[in-house]
Picture 1 (cartoon, protein in one colour):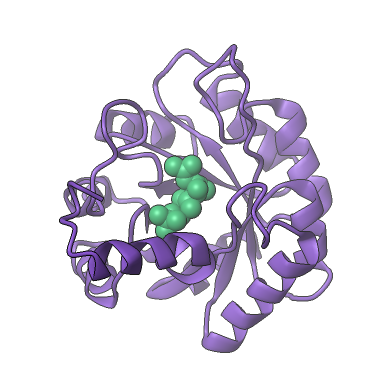
Picture 2 (tube, helix red, strand yellow):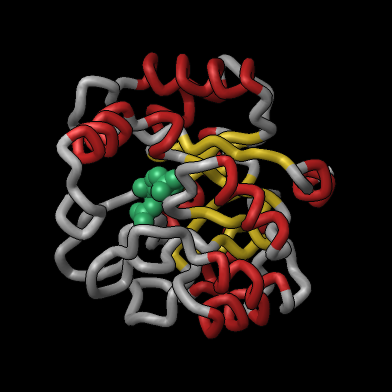
Length: 228
Ligand SMILES: CC(=O)N[C@H](C=O)[C@@H](O)[C@H](O)[C@H](O)COP(=O)(O)O
């Protein structure tokens, strides 16, 4: 049953419904509404942050949910699902796939332990990676899906474009790769699939109106991406 969730996502869209934190959309009932709108549009799975949002979405849809918990803890650079307790909380709240940071950085808990905890709860795991070395290590640790989620977010300026080269390199490792991070156009989604992505996760371009508005504001003022 569990592995067939991943099988069923081949060539499918996952919509990340993560409002801007503290923004006007940051309410569980609005996240649930975004999830239903994504489902109506043909999304095959959802990516949901936080237990209250996850419970609200779980109550309204049977679509598979990739769950994560983001915490801004100054003692660690690991933001996405850093602890055993968070993996267990996500399993309990109804996530089907549990996403966690799988970067090779100093971390409160090893990737192998987080993965084992997800599996012990009967859930699949998505390793949010920033590099091909992360992806290799995550597969060696037994993770089910590689996400390109953290490419561009572990130091230095965040690039403008999605990291399609990373998708291609990770796909060559032979495991399902979910392309995620800065997919804003349908042609970028197509390029990720052509590079070997199993599925593509789109967030901001569908569910963060503040960001989308900002892109248009920059365009109307004739700013280049570098100036924006
Ligand atoms: C780096 C990080 O913390 N990424 C988070 C991971 O869940 C989310 O903030 C992103 O919105 C998500 O990855 C989807 O990406 P985009 O919104 O670019 O389509």
